[in-house]
Length: 321
Ligand code: CP
Image (cartoon, rainbow, N blue to C red; front, side, top):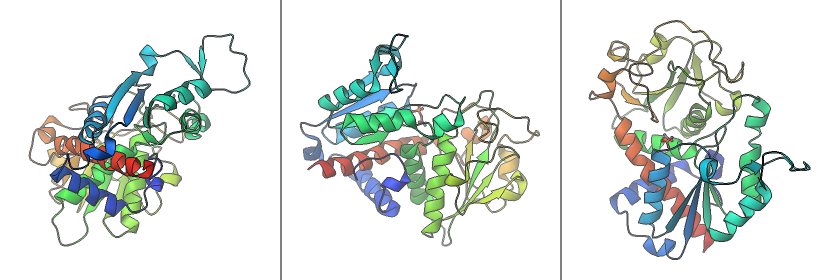
């Protein structure tokens, strides 16, 4: 693996999941791979799980880790080419990324979308420039349109907890929120689940109110529904997540009542396990009764972020040698 920015960077998702589960059983077996290697984690936005799980994964692999909170501690970056930098930006991404690549063997980058200009966000201009100029393998810690480390952890969690004879039915269910959130997590979850569906691992449905359709680029083969009640029938996993509109880009649209996931709705499913990437707004997106009850997988899922990150970093370290 040369970089990890989407499911398209992974040759075999089933194999990567198995590799992560093997690491979970034996976390310190590969410390030789990371000896004298440095991981740099660059954050332009807040993080709890991604920051700590990726650091811990690197430590388990014997790497040293440096963290840069670029939004608070770095120079204001210019990303446009051909501009006279006589405004508020101090350093160009060309130099900043290239310099970070001098200090690190692998870099991770978190860069959220602005949610104002769809083309700008979906072109991943900042992320792609960082990858281009840093000159070392890059792990996405969540970009404008994707969060692949989260999605890998989600697939690991499903693989680990599913003991049924038939394929599980996995439902991505839109939930309410007070803020306009990016589509990165649902895009990425959908992209990974569609790939898993293609490979016969599960059946995948997306349910949301009208107007919240994701970009079709991320949903090939997914069943799309606007009826939560219908979609939950027979569900084995419900992945709860809010996202803002792609069509009316970055907007929070009006939607009918009844989209928060709670125990009453859970009864419609096949006693489904409930997932969420976290952070979650209790009793807005997901009820406390679910989060504190036996169907919630959210802590297990967050724990698997470590093994997802370690499997990816291991693959990248192997490609360096
Ligand atoms: N799920 C997730 O990426 O969490 P953080 O934003 O806290 O890293």
